[in-house]
Length: 316
Length: 262
Image (cartoon, rainbow over all chains, first blue to last red; front, side, top):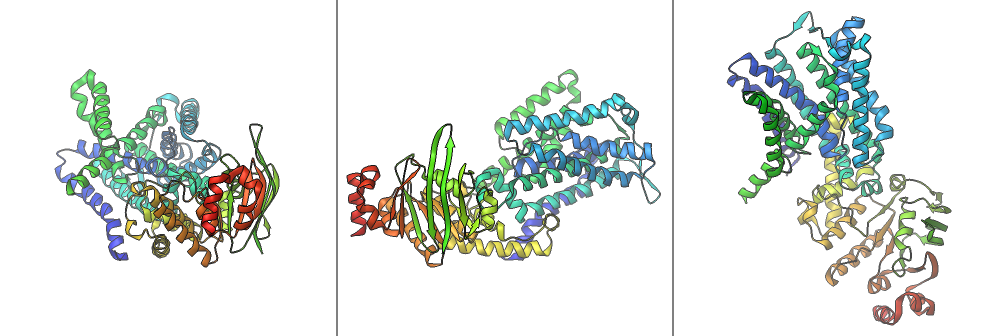
């Protein structure tokens, strides 16, 4: 395979996803669908980041909604308390998330498996508690209103506009993630997943690589959190809570660990299903749980890798 | 010149002195074998030398530099590589990607270049790929390059680990029982692979139970018993050493060793 052919196969999923984002609205009967679509894409962005950490590098985080919270409150507190422009606060939030990930990651990424899971869980709870208790800044448990994003004097609002913004950002994030995996850093991360000892013996600074991917995944989540807050016009500490973190992990696992396309599928299923199941009223949550269980029993590697395996089997 | 010198190393695990004052001196270009009964501390000694364990006593010098207590990744950058008795394969990655990881210490790209897939990354990937394919060719695994590493047979995985270590262009290569569990044909392939490494100037430290392989290929043989040096010398000297025969080789082993030398 020559180099050009290689880069075409690398970009193929990006083109396919971009086309999907572009074409899907043709089938949207109402603005409500744009709203659901935007939510799917925003969550998918956070899930791609978390998948880099979990699916590729093999490090679990049960506190990633904490970074969603930092991003979300950055675009709430910055404009309201300091009069700073929202877009600047979005970047500031991403940088702050990166710094927090660096500070938190350095000590806790030394931990493995369940111990790491509990430590990250603690981090997520910590963020949620600070956001709830610092009521003077954050509005406490009731949350706060988020001023609309203004770009070049234009007030960004409406589900369709946010659908396109989220879509463009997701495709960008998707491309960066694919790039990363096809690079020296990406190979090192995948190596760490399978054998830390072998990775170290080959000269890979395991602690540093884990920290790098933790920071990257935090920045993805932070940007997604900012988008969510700006899109909803409201933010509450629930966003950063334990259930939020679990939902992100569920999206990663359901879509497929280590499958970037799976991140979109996992986010889509867990955002769309609850909306579709509202007709069942009281049984909505129970059905959602049941469906997720069935998915995991029959597609245990996650939706995308399992189906890819089935198709590969058929071709043979 | 001595490439590797280990001076009176000791390490204790739960009150047991696994290595008890063992010393090694490996000259450049040699095949230096470490043999000994099960539990004599051979793998522990390799773990000390490759930085996975830190010795409680003693010092390690690599090419004249004191490297005691350095981490494995720091030793790797100084040209030390190793394989594992219990395979440490990146089983989710392809055979080629496994060996590409071996090139890590020669790769020069930053995280932002990697994220943006800068032209330098494409060039780096191509160079890494070519070098990895060359390393695979040396152990006869080019055909399997695209296969998932987890799908390879045991003997092939042993050679894959050697290829991965070779890709890092080590000066010193530690092989921990490369022939364990291999059939005679596979052992022969590993013998060939080691010989071709030595020709290229790579110094090899070999831990191995297969006496035929050890006696055939080694310049020096170091015998370990209960964490201490029992004897050291050429294969001929070691084979003739009464203590070694009693402690390790036994009647059967010495006959096999003798057979290998005749």
